[in-house]
Length: 627
Picture 1 (cartoon, rainbow, N blue to C red):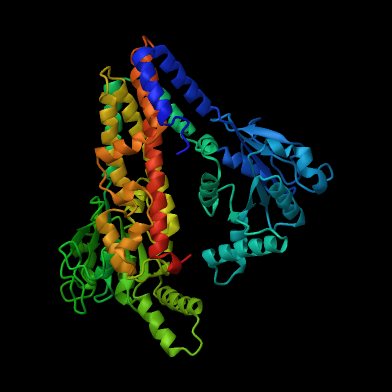
Picture 2: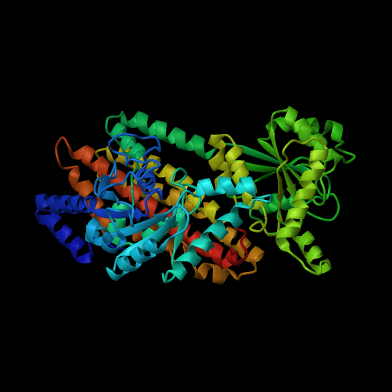
C-alpha cells in the first residue's frame, strides 16, 4: 500500500502510547509532516510554441487569463527563456518546471538535458501542438537512457477539433480524435520510440479528451510515496470549507451539511419516453435502467409486438429512485389522439422528452415536438432498433460499410424532420439491446450539457456504464461529495467523547461506499444483468475485479478490515484520540486528523471501485464499445 507505517511501526505506537504519550505524539507528527512534504518535480518540455506554459497553468488550476506572478507567461512568441519553477498554489511541495523549447538557439537539442538539469525531475511531459518532431524523439530517447519516465501530450486539441468540424462534411468527433492519436503514435514509432503513449489534451478544457487518462497513467507508474504528493487530496475550495468548519457552530454546521446532502441526493428527475406505438419505447425504458431485455418482473416495463403501454406508467430507477422514466402510450392511438396527447399525459411533470421512432419520424412525432417546444421543454429524437437495420443492410448490400450506412440513416431522419419545420434537429441512433454501440453516449453528453446544472449529476449517476467517459464523470461527481462527508466526520470529532468519531466515520464510509458500488453497477443485481446482456459469464466479470469492496457485502466489518491494512489510517486514528488529551489545541487537531483520514479513505475506496468498473466494462463491452 506504500504506507510508511508497517505492522512493526504500529506495534511500536501501541507500546509508546502505553508508556510514553508525548513520544507517540511526536512520532505521529513527524510522520504526517514528512508525508505532507514529499517533493514532486514535473518537467514540462517540448518545442517552442507548443503550449507548455499554458499547460503548466492549467495543471495548477489557474485561469487562462491569469497574468499574476504565479502564472507562467504565455503568448504567440516564445515566452519561456529559462528553466522556471512554478509551485502548486495549494501544495508547494509539488512543482511544475516550465522548460525552454528544445531546439531553440539558447537550448540546442544536443545539450538540452544537461542545461535544464534533468536529474532534479521525477518525470517529463513532452508537449507538441501538431506532430512530434525529431527533437522530441531525441529527447525521449535521452530521457530513457537516464531511466526517467516521459509522457507525450498532443496539445491544443480543442483548436484542431473546431477546425476539423468546419471543413468536414460529416464530422465525427471520436473518429477525428482517433486519427490524430494514430498519426502521433505512427510518427513516434518512426522515430524509434517503443510503445509510445500519447494523450490528447486541451489546456483550456482539461475535463475533455485524455487528461484523465494521463493522470491515471501517472497514478499507476509513479512510486506510491510520490503519488501521494500528486494526489491533490484537497482543492482550494475544500481547504476553505475546512477552515470555516474550525470556526463554526458545530450543531448548526452538521445540520447544514446534512440538509445539503439530503437535498442533493433527492433531486427529482422525470424523463418522458414517447413516440408512436411499436417504436420500442418500453424496451428503451428498461435498457436505460439497466434491466435485461428478458426481465419480466414487476420492475420492468412490459414489451411485445402489440401495444403494451396502455396508460402513463412511471418506472423508478432501481438504484436511484429519484430518477423516474415515464413510459407514455403511443401518440396517435385511439385512447391518446395526437391533438390532446400532451394534456392527457400531464406534460408539466416532465423535465424533458425523448421521442422514439423505429423507422422514420412521422407527422404525429413532429406535432408533438412542436407542442413540447411551445411549452418550453426540451425534446430529443431517438431512432431505435438500429441493430436490426444494420443486420438487414449487411445482408442486402454487396459492399457493406457500417459508417456510411449509419450516416445515411441519420441524414434521412434529419431531412424528414427539416421538411416538417423542425429547426436543427438532433437525431441519435440507438439500439436498446446494445446501448454501448452507436449514439447513446452522444445522447448522454447532450443531455448533460443541456440540463440545468443541479439536475446533471442526478442524470449522470443513473446512467448505465456504456462508455469510459461516463465512468470517469461518475467518479468526478462522487468525488465532489467527499469534502462534505469528511466535514461531517470532522464536526463529530469536535464532540469530546472518545471513539465516537470513529463510530460515525465507519457509518459514513459504509453508506458512501455502497453508493459508489451501486453507481458503478458493481452490486449483485447490476452485475447479473450485465452478464445476461453481454453474454459474459458472471464469474468472468467478477474475476477481473481486484477490490474486496466489489465482491463482498459492504458493512462495518469489511470497512474496518480495510482501514486496519492502512498504516496511515491506524496512525491517524491513534493520533486523533491522543490529541483529545492536549489542552486548548486538542480539538482543532482532532478535527483536522478526522477530516483528513475520512477524506483519504473515501477517495481510496472511490478509486478502487472506479477502476474495477472500468475492468468490468472492458471485459463485458470493451471490444465492441463505440468510441
